[in-house]
Length: 260
Image 1 (cartoon, rainbow, N blue to C red):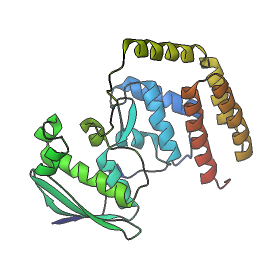
Image 2 (tube, helix red, strand yellow; image 1 turned 45 degrees about the vertical axis):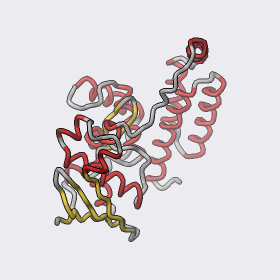
Image 3 (tube, rainbow, N blue to C red; image 1 turned 120 degrees about the vertical axis):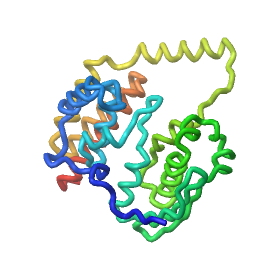
Image 4 (cartoon, helix red, strand yellow; image 1 turned 90 degrees about the vertical axis):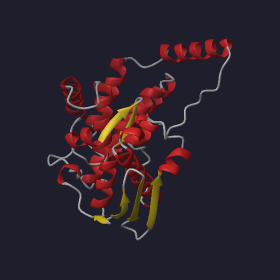
Protein backbone atom coordinates (compact mmCIF):
# COMPACT_ATOMS: atom_id res chain seq x y z
CA UNK A 1 0.00 0.00 0.00
CA UNK A 2 1.51 3.30 -1.09
CA UNK A 3 0.52 6.92 -0.60
CA UNK A 4 1.21 9.42 -3.36
CA UNK A 5 1.32 13.01 -2.09
CA UNK A 6 4.21 14.73 -3.89
CA UNK A 7 4.26 14.88 -7.70
CA UNK A 8 7.48 14.71 -9.65
CA UNK A 9 8.69 18.19 -10.55
CA UNK A 10 8.44 17.49 -14.28
CA UNK A 11 4.68 16.97 -13.98
CA UNK A 12 3.86 20.10 -11.99
CA UNK A 13 2.29 22.87 -14.13
CA UNK A 14 4.37 26.01 -13.90
CA UNK A 15 3.12 29.52 -14.61
CA UNK A 16 5.13 31.38 -17.18
CA UNK A 17 7.57 33.65 -15.36
CA UNK A 18 7.14 36.28 -18.04
CA UNK A 19 3.35 36.28 -17.80
CA UNK A 20 1.07 35.51 -20.73
CA UNK A 21 2.45 35.30 -24.25
CA UNK A 22 1.05 37.30 -27.16
CA UNK A 23 -0.98 35.50 -29.80
CA UNK A 24 1.83 36.04 -32.33
CA UNK A 25 4.35 34.42 -29.99
CA UNK A 26 2.01 31.48 -29.44
CA UNK A 27 1.60 31.03 -33.20
CA UNK A 28 5.37 30.95 -33.71
CA UNK A 29 5.82 28.53 -30.83
CA UNK A 30 3.08 26.28 -32.20
CA UNK A 31 4.78 26.16 -35.60
CA UNK A 32 8.14 25.33 -34.02
CA UNK A 33 6.62 22.61 -31.83
CA UNK A 34 4.87 20.96 -34.77
CA UNK A 35 7.96 21.12 -36.99
CA UNK A 36 10.24 19.68 -34.30
CA UNK A 37 8.49 16.30 -34.34
CA UNK A 38 9.42 15.89 -30.66
CA UNK A 39 5.85 15.92 -29.35
CA UNK A 40 2.60 14.10 -30.22
CA UNK A 41 1.05 17.33 -31.52
CA UNK A 42 1.93 17.27 -35.21
CA UNK A 43 0.19 20.32 -36.74
CA UNK A 44 0.57 24.04 -35.92
CA UNK A 45 -3.20 24.37 -35.49
CA UNK A 46 -3.36 21.57 -32.92
CA UNK A 47 -0.31 22.91 -31.11
CA UNK A 48 -1.80 26.42 -31.01
CA UNK A 49 -5.00 25.08 -29.46
CA UNK A 50 -2.97 23.37 -26.73
CA UNK A 51 -0.96 26.55 -26.09
CA UNK A 52 -4.09 28.71 -25.83
CA UNK A 53 -5.59 26.20 -23.43
CA UNK A 54 -2.38 26.28 -21.40
CA UNK A 55 -2.38 30.07 -21.26
CA UNK A 56 -5.95 30.07 -19.94
CA UNK A 57 -4.77 27.66 -17.22
CA UNK A 58 -1.59 29.68 -16.51
CA UNK A 59 0.60 26.74 -17.55
CA UNK A 60 3.92 27.22 -19.37
CA UNK A 61 3.68 26.26 -23.08
CA UNK A 62 6.39 23.60 -22.90
CA UNK A 63 4.65 22.04 -19.90
CA UNK A 64 1.41 21.97 -21.84
CA UNK A 65 2.79 20.02 -24.79
CA UNK A 66 4.02 17.42 -22.31
CA UNK A 67 0.71 17.26 -20.42
CA UNK A 68 -1.63 17.11 -23.40
CA UNK A 69 -2.09 15.01 -26.51
CA UNK A 70 -4.42 15.69 -29.42
CA UNK A 71 -6.39 12.56 -30.26
CA UNK A 72 -8.91 12.52 -33.10
CA UNK A 73 -8.69 16.32 -33.18
CA UNK A 74 -9.51 16.80 -29.50
CA UNK A 75 -7.22 17.82 -26.61
CA UNK A 76 -6.70 15.06 -24.04
CA UNK A 77 -4.99 15.47 -20.67
CA UNK A 78 -2.59 12.66 -19.74
CA UNK A 79 -3.64 10.82 -16.60
CA UNK A 80 -0.26 11.44 -14.96
CA UNK A 81 -0.68 15.17 -15.49
CA UNK A 82 -4.23 15.07 -14.11
CA UNK A 83 -2.98 13.30 -10.98
CA UNK A 84 -0.07 15.74 -10.59
CA UNK A 85 -2.43 18.72 -10.72
CA UNK A 86 -4.74 17.05 -8.21
CA UNK A 87 -1.87 16.46 -5.78
CA UNK A 88 -0.44 19.94 -6.36
CA UNK A 89 -3.81 21.41 -5.32
CA UNK A 90 -3.65 19.48 -2.04
CA UNK A 91 -5.24 16.17 -3.01
CA UNK A 92 -3.93 12.79 -1.94
CA UNK A 93 -4.09 9.25 -3.30
CA UNK A 94 -3.41 6.05 -1.40
CA UNK A 95 -2.83 3.11 -3.72
CA UNK A 96 -4.42 0.08 -2.05
CA UNK A 97 -3.43 -2.36 -4.78
CA UNK A 98 -1.58 -2.14 -8.08
CA UNK A 99 -1.26 -5.25 -10.21
CA UNK A 100 -2.11 -6.40 -13.73
CA UNK A 101 -5.30 -7.96 -12.37
CA UNK A 102 -6.51 -5.09 -10.21
CA UNK A 103 -5.79 -1.47 -9.34
CA UNK A 104 -7.51 0.24 -6.42
CA UNK A 105 -6.94 3.72 -5.02
CA UNK A 106 -8.38 5.91 -2.29
CA UNK A 107 -8.53 9.56 -3.39
CA UNK A 108 -8.93 12.49 -1.00
CA UNK A 109 -9.79 15.87 -2.54
CA UNK A 110 -8.68 19.27 -1.16
CA UNK A 111 -12.32 19.95 -0.16
CA UNK A 112 -12.42 16.83 2.03
CA UNK A 113 -14.30 14.55 -0.37
CA UNK A 114 -13.07 10.97 -0.43
CA UNK A 115 -13.67 8.17 -2.91
CA UNK A 116 -12.23 4.72 -3.50
CA UNK A 117 -12.15 3.54 -7.10
CA UNK A 118 -11.27 0.04 -8.27
CA UNK A 119 -10.69 -1.28 -11.76
CA UNK A 120 -10.22 -5.02 -12.17
CA UNK A 121 -10.35 -7.48 -15.07
CA UNK A 122 -14.10 -7.99 -14.70
CA UNK A 123 -14.83 -4.27 -14.85
CA UNK A 124 -12.57 -3.86 -17.87
CA UNK A 125 -14.49 -6.68 -19.57
CA UNK A 126 -17.86 -5.16 -18.66
CA UNK A 127 -16.75 -1.83 -20.13
CA UNK A 128 -15.89 -3.56 -23.40
CA UNK A 129 -12.18 -2.76 -23.09
CA UNK A 130 -10.68 -6.22 -22.58
CA UNK A 131 -9.66 -6.62 -26.22
CA UNK A 132 -8.16 -3.13 -26.54
CA UNK A 133 -4.45 -3.41 -27.43
CA UNK A 134 -3.27 -1.18 -24.60
CA UNK A 135 -5.26 -3.11 -22.00
CA UNK A 136 -3.65 -6.32 -23.22
CA UNK A 137 -0.12 -4.90 -23.33
CA UNK A 138 -0.24 -2.61 -20.28
CA UNK A 139 -3.09 -3.85 -18.05
CA UNK A 140 -1.93 -2.29 -14.78
CA UNK A 141 -1.12 1.11 -16.31
CA UNK A 142 -4.46 1.35 -18.10
CA UNK A 143 -6.43 0.35 -14.98
CA UNK A 144 -4.48 2.92 -12.99
CA UNK A 145 -5.28 5.62 -15.56
CA UNK A 146 -8.97 4.74 -15.35
CA UNK A 147 -8.93 4.98 -11.56
CA UNK A 148 -7.30 8.41 -11.73
CA UNK A 149 -9.71 9.92 -14.25
CA UNK A 150 -12.85 8.46 -12.68
CA UNK A 151 -11.95 9.46 -9.12
CA UNK A 152 -10.68 12.96 -9.81
CA UNK A 153 -13.56 13.87 -12.08
CA UNK A 154 -15.97 12.65 -9.38
CA UNK A 155 -14.58 14.56 -6.38
CA UNK A 156 -12.49 17.36 -7.92
CA UNK A 157 -14.11 18.18 -11.29
CA UNK A 158 -11.94 21.12 -12.34
CA UNK A 159 -11.63 19.84 -15.90
CA UNK A 160 -14.14 18.47 -18.38
CA UNK A 161 -11.45 17.03 -20.64
CA UNK A 162 -11.03 13.31 -21.13
CA UNK A 163 -7.69 11.74 -20.36
CA UNK A 164 -5.43 10.49 -23.13
CA UNK A 165 -6.09 6.90 -22.07
CA UNK A 166 -9.87 7.34 -22.18
CA UNK A 167 -9.66 8.84 -25.65
CA UNK A 168 -7.58 5.91 -26.87
CA UNK A 169 -10.09 3.51 -25.31
CA UNK A 170 -12.90 5.32 -27.05
CA UNK A 171 -14.53 7.09 -24.11
CA UNK A 172 -16.25 9.55 -26.44
CA UNK A 173 -19.26 8.02 -28.12
CA UNK A 174 -19.47 8.44 -31.87
CA UNK A 175 -22.78 8.42 -33.70
CA UNK A 176 -22.61 5.58 -36.23
CA UNK A 177 -26.32 5.61 -37.17
CA UNK A 178 -26.61 4.77 -40.88
CA UNK A 179 -27.91 7.52 -43.14
CA UNK A 180 -29.44 7.36 -46.57
CA UNK A 181 -27.63 8.56 -49.68
CA UNK A 182 -29.97 11.55 -49.86
CA UNK A 183 -29.20 12.53 -46.26
CA UNK A 184 -25.48 12.17 -46.89
CA UNK A 185 -25.68 14.43 -49.96
CA UNK A 186 -27.69 17.01 -47.98
CA UNK A 187 -25.11 17.02 -45.14
CA UNK A 188 -22.23 17.48 -47.57
CA UNK A 189 -24.09 20.24 -49.41
CA UNK A 190 -24.85 22.08 -46.18
CA UNK A 191 -21.26 21.72 -45.07
CA UNK A 192 -20.00 23.11 -48.36
CA UNK A 193 -22.43 26.02 -48.15
CA UNK A 194 -21.22 26.83 -44.64
CA UNK A 195 -17.60 26.74 -45.78
CA UNK A 196 -18.41 29.07 -48.65
CA UNK A 197 -19.53 31.78 -46.25
CA UNK A 198 -16.70 31.25 -43.74
CA UNK A 199 -14.43 34.13 -42.80
CA UNK A 200 -11.22 34.47 -44.78
CA UNK A 201 -7.85 33.95 -43.12
CA UNK A 202 -7.25 37.69 -43.32
CA UNK A 203 -10.57 38.46 -41.62
CA UNK A 204 -9.86 35.99 -38.84
CA UNK A 205 -6.36 37.35 -38.31
CA UNK A 206 -7.71 40.90 -38.10
CA UNK A 207 -9.97 39.85 -35.22
CA UNK A 208 -7.17 37.84 -33.57
CA UNK A 209 -4.91 40.89 -33.70
CA UNK A 210 -7.63 43.11 -32.22
CA UNK A 211 -8.23 40.66 -29.38
CA UNK A 212 -4.52 40.36 -28.67
CA UNK A 213 -4.06 44.15 -28.67
CA UNK A 214 -6.96 44.89 -26.29
CA UNK A 215 -5.46 46.94 -23.42
CA UNK A 216 -8.16 46.20 -20.83
CA UNK A 217 -11.21 44.05 -20.11
CA UNK A 218 -13.70 46.59 -21.47
CA UNK A 219 -11.86 46.82 -24.78
CA UNK A 220 -11.51 43.05 -24.92
CA UNK A 221 -15.25 42.57 -24.46
CA UNK A 222 -15.96 45.07 -27.22
CA UNK A 223 -13.63 43.55 -29.83
CA UNK A 224 -14.77 40.05 -28.91
CA UNK A 225 -18.40 41.04 -29.43
CA UNK A 226 -17.52 42.38 -32.88
CA UNK A 227 -15.57 39.24 -33.78
CA UNK A 228 -18.36 36.97 -32.56
CA UNK A 229 -20.97 38.90 -34.53
CA UNK A 230 -18.85 38.74 -37.69
CA UNK A 231 -18.45 34.99 -37.28
CA UNK A 232 -22.19 34.56 -36.69
CA UNK A 233 -23.05 36.57 -39.81
CA UNK A 234 -20.68 34.36 -41.82
CA UNK A 235 -22.07 31.22 -40.15
CA UNK A 236 -18.48 30.36 -39.25
CA UNK A 237 -18.75 28.45 -35.97
CA UNK A 238 -15.11 27.38 -36.11
CA UNK A 239 -14.02 31.02 -36.20
CA UNK A 240 -16.34 31.86 -33.31
CA UNK A 241 -14.84 29.05 -31.24
CA UNK A 242 -11.34 30.28 -32.06
CA UNK A 243 -12.26 33.84 -31.06
CA UNK A 244 -13.70 32.52 -27.78
CA UNK A 245 -10.50 30.60 -27.06
CA UNK A 246 -8.37 33.72 -27.57
CA UNK A 247 -10.82 35.79 -25.52
CA UNK A 248 -10.65 33.32 -22.62
CA UNK A 249 -6.85 33.31 -22.72
CA UNK A 250 -6.71 37.12 -22.74
CA UNK A 251 -9.27 37.32 -19.93
CA UNK A 252 -7.15 34.91 -17.89
CA UNK A 253 -4.19 37.26 -18.45
CA UNK A 254 -6.18 40.24 -17.17
CA UNK A 255 -7.35 38.18 -14.18
CA UNK A 256 -3.76 37.33 -13.37
CA UNK A 257 -2.87 41.02 -13.58
CA UNK A 258 -5.74 41.93 -11.26
CA UNK A 259 -7.84 43.74 -13.87
CA UNK A 260 -10.89 41.50 -13.44
